[in-house]
Length: 73
Image 1 (cartoon, rainbow, N blue to C red):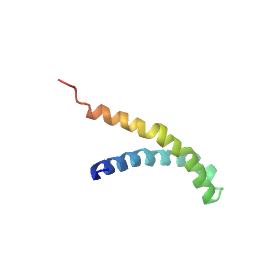
Image 2: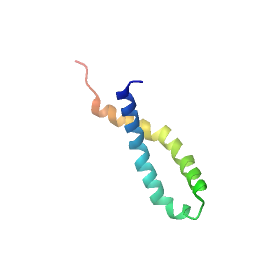
Image 3: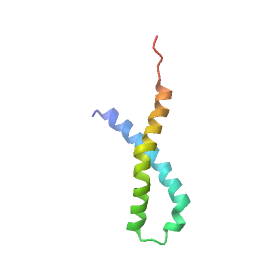
C-alpha cells in the first residue's frame, strides 16, 4: 500500500473513531466509571469496533465519494 493511501486510511479511521469514542463516553462514561479499566475497555471495544467497521468507515467513504465525484463527459 502506498504512503498516500495509508495516510488516507489512517485519517478516515481517526475521523470515525474519535467522535464515536467521544459520544460513547459522553453517554455512558458515568455508568461505566464504576467498572475496572479492563472492563470499560472491553465494553467500549465490543460496542465501537463493529460500529466503525460496518457503519463509520462506509459512511465516511460515502461522504468522501460525494466530494470527490467527477462526472464523466
